[in-house]
Image 1 (tube, one colour):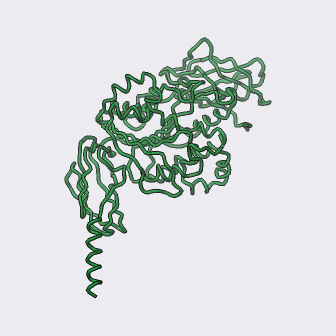
Image 2 (cartoon, rainbow, N blue to C red):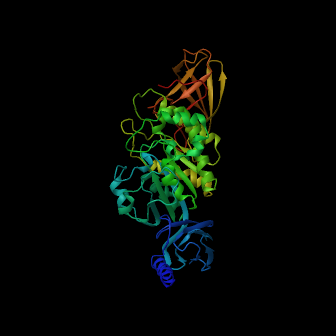
Image 3 (cartoon, rainbow, N blue to C red):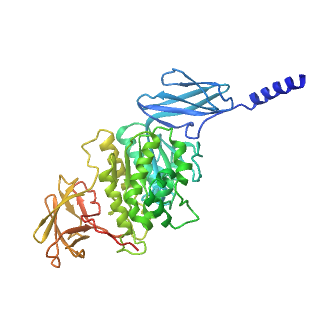
Length: 467
């Protein structure tokens, strides 16, 4: 009996000696929390049902919660943008999260063009890196890894923006965040969560993909690669799921090149990704993204990349609180990673500033096809985001094609008349459809007066045969 009592006491003190409270990596020094919102502070403890007190320095009002089976979480209401602050978490031991700012938090995700860093290639990189001294911009880099099941934590750490940290961070995310910071004058937190080469399927929860029979089948068309995950949900489980408790303002996204192999399915998979993330985060946040740039791929005149672009366009037209950046004027046919990321970041920021931060006078998009009228041998095209008129860069408008009922497209003559474009071709006597910039490597030259390029589009719903 004495031995049993001794062992019990010894076990108790052993547990106390090795007891620990710990946090997910996303909750760490230098982080940015979403302003004027409810944020979750959570973690784990080896004392499975102990009381935890969380005290933020912005109001010094403690909240007390109780762990359940070793996991605990509490809600805090954040003030207006500002800082720096500290949060103290106290149980059988005490944790201080320091140098916290309150501001706007955005998640940047996708494949290599979103991942691309200034050190890998950026216009005027040396100067951009040297000037990246923004202590109120903070970076969190999610490391690349996969998991077969959803994970509660991911590797990563918050850093203060400096030349040293910026040069190895996502160029687009940084440039987007810098524009918000300059325009709004508040702290900005940026989460970079990317993996070059990844198809969209690996970023979508497995149960959501499996719930759609056609998507489940077309996912099998993706060619397996050794350098990035291809299977459904693997990146989501390891790199997105662990962040779901962290309140974000919105998402910026650049991906699609790897889905040329099953391009038609992107009409369904891209909206599904947006819907699944919003449901998982419990918030209908804005989702702004980049239409993939022109590139030669295997065939300049092929249309697999054009189909992905059209799926991206249709997603913007159909899904609320989305916006698309067009890059057909700043691509590079010889480089799938064009280094002009400045315009990409700026154009993404235009969407957020215009739609989310009260700057509604900003024009955030180039011309978007709205409707057409057939007038004898001509088709008149109408556009949104063209209220101040349309312009061309060059002598003649390029990349317009017109077809009759035989579905054969011919290069068209196109001219701007006010806010419209009138299209015709001698070979087409009874036109019924127009396509614009609808090839892999199209480099069109139609813009609005705000110098933003028009998106590729097609007016028909004819079946496209892909190789």
